Figure 1: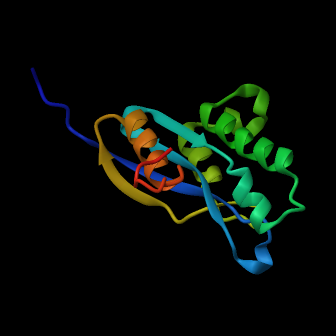
Figure 2 (figure 1 turned 90 degrees about the vertical axis):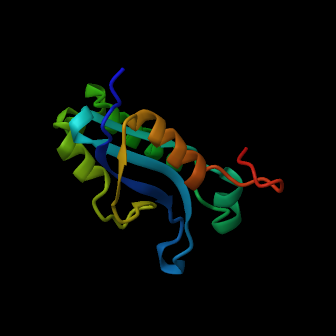
Length: 138
């Protein structure tokens, strides 16, 4: 049985910044792109308690809809507009471009993976899911 050679990938954290002027933010998703494996994926989850704590007047449904739209763009959902119909590399560039909206990407990070989907899930668990008191994620 031959061992799989890991492929390079790039990823960014998707952050919610409800009031840009305050600079407060929290992680709400991860987007990962691996050209060699033709993989582009995003995983999101909105922590409504955090959003309400930072900005009680934030429109939760609108923020959730924006996050969900980013996942659909990553998936290439043609009903999500012209950006979703672009090649994966261009969609990734669009998803991780600096933004002044309520959803902002982090800087792009890199790594190696032989299973980008599993890597996306692991990054999401590490970077987005809340840590419980016992140290585990939810």
